Length: 234
Image 1 (spheres, helix red, strand yellow):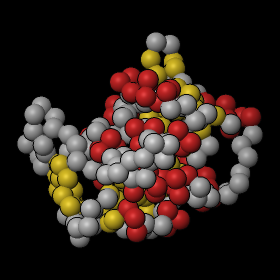
Image 2 (image 1 turned 120 degrees about the horizontal axis):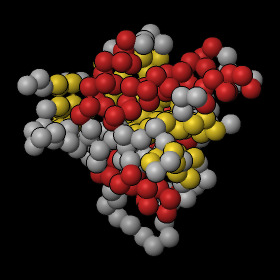
Image 3 (image 1 turned 90 degrees about the vertical axis):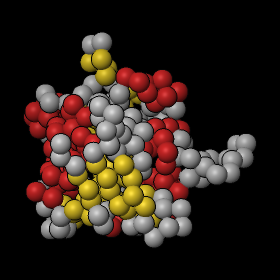
């Protein structure tokens, strides 16, 4: 059995820039391994980011496959200290990590969720040119504030369709299932880890469209080509 451990919360070199990944305990191990392999090969440093609760670092384990936790990451980057504009993209990793990151110590009736990761996500959503990604269960973090997802076309694991739709998200269906990949403006969503390879490819494509031609408006032919592979919202 192969165990994966990321000690300082960073993988690769920022040749083309950095991709931040929000993470906590019970993250998806398949996505974790794939992110660590694919993005650095494409020239992007992967930074793992979390709320550290006043600690200089915290170590998180993956969601156990077959009852065994195989992957660990030690995070040193506090989400409260992160400027979203330092990144080309921000991804919320799947499994149950995002549910943990939306936890609030204190709550008040009528007050928007003030969990540090949710506050960060609001800033990220407003950052010009920044791509945001969510896969599987990770739209749970967006559901913590309906303003983050209301009216956005997305896909997700079947388990959380009700959560997403109740928060105002517009889930895209393909037959009797949710879509594999959906792109709605700056938001790229994937159904589950079975489609993580395509999710990563599309995420980088969206980043590099900004890098190569900021503000580019695709023509009908280009849109048609891309819509063959996934749902693209103009």
